[in-house]
Image (cartoon, rainbow, N blue to C red; front, side, top):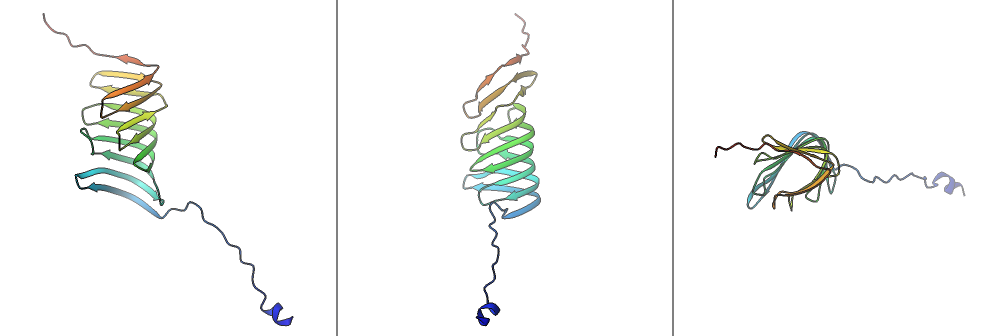
Amino acid sequence: MLIYILFQPLKIKQQEFGDVPVLTMGSFVMYELESTGLQTIMAGSKALRYTERYIVDDVNFTDNSKEFISNMQADNGIYKNNIIDLKGNVLYEREDGLTFESDTLNYNTKNSIAQTQDDYLAHRDKNSMRGASFVYDSINNTMKSKQVTVQYQLKESKI
């Protein structure tokens, strides 16, 4: 009995760590290369890399994989499974001059579909459009939106 008291096993608390960052980065740029060339560039002031996603502050994301280069900037972003979810002061700019501004944006890099459920402002040149939500297919150049108000500048021509 004396031996048991002296060598009694200790009860050690075990703590399970759930979702823990694998890597923490500050002021970084990430390049995604494929056999066809540079596909995406993601930069930010701070990032946490988990096993299946990146969480980025002051995100600047460029998709170079389609006909037109698309650039997105926001206060925060989560990149997972070729989808980037952006939040806070989102700005989407496409190489041909199309621009969206919103509070949130979900962009799928595989099918180049950008969408938001929030109010937005879109413009190209002097034309602008406001609405309550949108789904924009960059490959087919189509857009679905709700509660739309459009301001369109017509060009004058001489007859």
